[in-house]
Length: 203
Image (cartoon, rainbow, N blue to C red; front, side, top):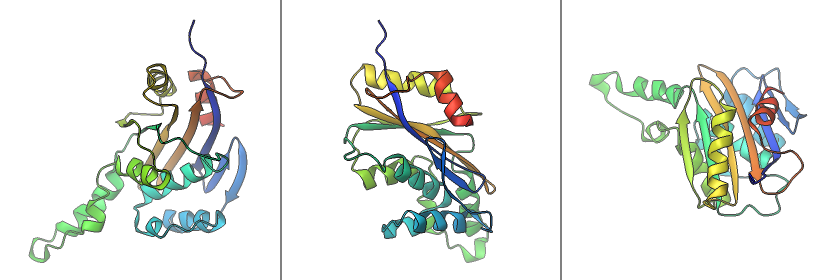
C-alpha cells in the first residue's frame, strides 16, 4: 500500500500579491519594480534579516515565500529537503552579470552579482536561514510540473532521505515572476497528489 503524504501548507507570489493556503496576505499594485514589491513584503512580514537586501530578486522571492510558508511551523526539522524548479534558471541575474563584464576596457565583474548566477543559491539562502541540512535539488523545466515534484518528494520521504519536503516553482525572467512553494509532510488534511498540487498552484 502506498504511503500517504500531505500538503500541509502552500504559498504563492504572483501578480503583485502574496497568499498562503489560498488566502491573500499582502498586495501592492503601486510598486514599480520587483525590488520594491519584495521590499514591501519584507516590511509587511516585519523581518529582520540584513542579508536579504544583498540577495538578487530570484533569491528574495524564494526567501519571502519560504518565510510565509514556514511561519506557522514551531520548528523546522533540519532534515527538511528542498526541491525547486523554474524555466529560466538564473537568467535574470546572468544578464546583469554580463552587463558588468561586456566592457572589456573597464572589466569590473561584480562578485556580489556573480554569486547569484547559479539558481540553487536560493536554496542555500533558505537552508542557512532555517538551518536545513538535508537533500536539495534544483531542476530546469519548461513549466510547472506537479507530477515530477510529487514523485520526487515521495521518493525522498519513502527512502527516509527527508522528514519533510519543501517543493515548488520559483521563476523570474524580465520582471515576470511566478512563485509557488508547498510544504509536504507525513501529517495533515490535504493528501499529496499531482492533481492537488497542481490545483493549489493554479489557485
